[in-house]
Amino acid sequence: MRALIIFLFLIHGGIHLMGFLKAYQWAEIGQLTQPVSRPLGLLWLLATTLFLIATVAFLFKSYSWPLIAFAAVLLSQILVFLYWQDAKFGSLPNLLLLVVALGAFGMQRFERIYRQDVHVAVSENPAGSGVVAEGELKRLPPPVQRYLRYTGVVGKPRVYNMRLVFEGQMREKGKPWFPFTSEQHNFFEHPSRLFFMKARFKGLPTYGYHTYRATTAGMLIKLAGWIPVVDLKDPLLFPTETVTFLNDLCLFAPSALLDERIEWEPIDALSARVIFTNQGSRVSAVLYFDETGRLTNFVSEDRYDISEMKAYPFSTPVGNYKDFSGYRLPGFGEAVWHYPDGEFAYGEFTILSVEYNVANPHKP
Image (cartoon, rainbow, N blue to C red; front, side, top):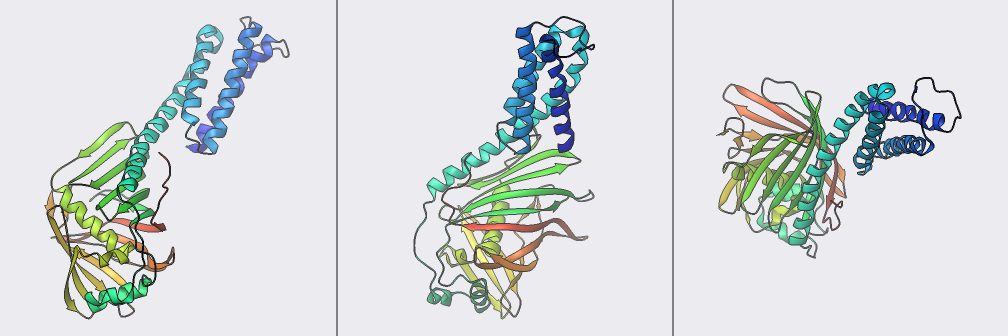
């Protein structure tokens, strides 16, 4: 698809050069039977230039390329109307490029909402200071203590927010996998999670934005950044996303488990129950560890399957521990529903990067 767009920009833009060449009589252009004045010849050249600039901006993934493409298509179509007899077939590539540019602009506008929310959350959750001390681990169950030591939190700065980047694939029950990439920011002083996903669903660009902040949670999914296909703000989303937020802390911000708002119930040498309450929503999960101290699974019964609006056991088995920003964290995980008729893995995630205490996120 990307190669096709570049091809259209270059070929369609190059064709406009004929009007300039005819106007200045630098070449015999039989395809243009109508005379072309020199001023209009310069407009044909300008159209070629705009298409070339749009191509370069598109190649370098500049946010400005849809606007440049709009200008190129507008000028091109004006010239097509002026020379309709010779140039009418130029309307088709103009229409195709207009649709592509509109889709890109819509997706950028949708993503900009997420970026703006992240900046607001950064200002509302100022970074603190201090490092994690060994003595703070004493109140935790023994397997959780080993986990925090294994991940390497002792002696490192306290974590106040984090940024995660994933890639992977997801699916609905009875449907094929679709690929995605995602970025999310979590904030801990005022618990919030902002998750933005880019996917191709049935070959179409689809963006999704999950929000969890203050007392609300929502999920908005748009086709090409314009057409809402899911817009959900059900009250059951808040406890569901509270479980997801807790899951993020356990897997990717282990030092945040020292927060006094988190309660613990010891179970045995390789498991413990974690309990988290936020805005009246109290959720829990059982954490399972191996002998080396690695967290291997997170299992909760407090999360709702949004497609059915029913609570089912939910787990995230993880593995492939790697170094991320100086911490040993899982590099791969699954999201699994435990339905009455059996387990169903609906998501596979590969972690690309983890950053902590992000003060200057990408500008909106």
